[in-house]
Length: 245
Image (cartoon, rainbow, N blue to C red):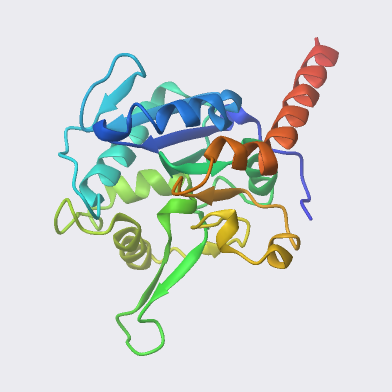
């Protein structure tokens, strides 16, 4: 399925979108599961919390939308990337996104990071009935962008939120359409929980992500779907590193 070697984890920056009311229950789940296998990760909130630590984006939290926060995150990552020369990819994830770092590393081996690339679970808005329709990456399953594209989004002047509560994933779809950048759909990303899909469907592929902690044990989901794969890939990477030394 995957043609090249997995991209190194040092090539991926993970930006986790959170808010103060979820610091105590959601962030510990992230840290105890997939975050252990990241090289670069930032937790972005509307408040500074040194115990995590979080990065205060300076945008008030909203009940819906989060466009202002997400665009502020992308701006911060674009500036930060100057000091992270190995980073080629940016993943924007919710604080209740459950994912496999190793499977993401494999998937990204299929793409050229020197080009503007946007990957995730693609949805469409009004694409059948209107010339104003557009595609977008649904945010809960994780949105993946090449760093080249993040810099274009930030610097182009074509991506300014109508309001801080505009739906962020949908508005990013508008921005990508303005830039002429297509969205690559991957069925490996999932906007919902494993229980929301037919078991027969999930057996047809190796998922990269699921979304939501509602009425499930999120750590259990990670253990069932991703833990062994991440652990094994991490051990293999360590063994390869020692052989090179």
